[in-house]
Image (tube, rainbow, N blue to C red; front, side):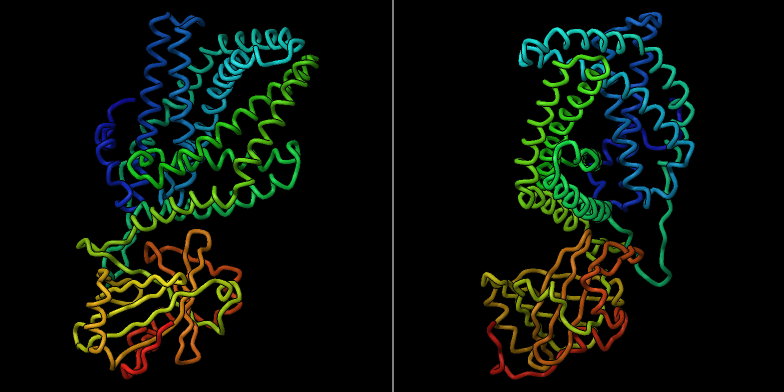
Length: 495
């Protein structure tokens, strides 16, 4: 790669430390640049290996396999990063670049898979039935010939598909634009919030495919298994730069790695079984089909049979990203960005969940009105907060802190002129969490959803849409502080 203005590989490594708090457009670019630079480094090592060996097919067998593995991982993660972040990358990957990376992937995959399958056969040889071993040795020899003869094809693929686009990619990934609303504080969506949205949507699809795999046989589940393996690869590509520094992300990254490895072994055995069948090697085909079935059973047990536990790890990672991705104003203060909807009633999906009991009161003021909130969870846990909000309803500064029940009780009498009481049902749906508030002193039900950016799209869930009367986000009549009523302390309700 020639010199291009933009962050260097060292700059990218340094900036990745706080990439989750940076705007989504920048965080996605930093991750993509990391994989691009790793791919460029592997490409340079590959070229040097061929130069030292004068381009012969025997070019450094051990080192070339390691270099190709690094290149393949970086390429796969680069492609996944570009695909999963296409909305915030604003057309970085056009058709020409996508086609070039896809063709490079096909060439490197073909050689690498021959290496991987050959190594897998070597490691499994002694575990195969005795009658299948001679046939396995025959296939292994053919795979070795295929891998050895494709070094120059890989070099040609790098020259044709990677070299012409690498500088273009660096240039496009080195800058971005932000959409700014006139009259509103700058609130670009943090990268962590964007990743939470991607994981949330991916988790819904993952559950659907895992349920399908559990309901059908090994052969009929191939399409769903393929989608699961690709989904896990993409999640690992998104989280790899942060997995070691964030425990919740690391837990899902490690679990996804184990799942991907198990599915990868199934895929290798299945492909080798197809090869054995075409080569009329029945003993080896039977042995490999047995391995596929045994690994399928293991996957059913460890993933599908423990689906809720598996997705709970993913949900924890998503929640950690959502928390870390709290929007910030240009001054660095936390922001609340939400949409609010008036409902005709409480949806059954919400009523089915144990509610939180909430009482809120506002201390009198003109320019400043401090809110006190006490929340009682279904298990009886009580938590109290003090909160200040400033700015327009769509995106406002929200500063709050947990306080003690003793301080809450001491300050609560000051709020007797403005209080509300309600129960809240909280439902996670894809990347968003919906809060359904049912007021206890009037016939009123509201739904709220917090967003990471004023421009973030939000679709009404199917369970909620039939109950929506209209959106009331900017209507003062539905602000909690306006809805508050006077109340005597004798009327305190203990849920």
